[in-house]
Length: 129
Image (cartoon, rainbow, N blue to C red; front, side):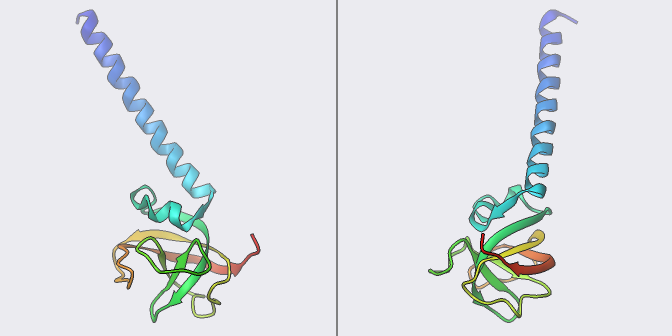
């Protein structure tokens, strides 16, 4: 092996290690942080399959889900998040809630066209902050 081959091998190993550390940090950050709805729905691939805690406002109720947003009022867009699970029937529209659940792609046809939704793993609760 010559010097150039050794340097290339080292560079590839260092790059692979950096990619693994970055991926692990992203997963850890997502799992332990309180997220905004838009932060998740604007970069959804980053959060697929993770349990997330989010804060937002229910804007619209549908038979199977409730659409959550970062704003208490306003137009519904593709970046609002459909939420399913136990406890959605009792949610008051336009009030701030903390919600926790698994972020999923597919399996729900939402009126806003979102391919993603949150499946609750804990009951939502009202919050002032």
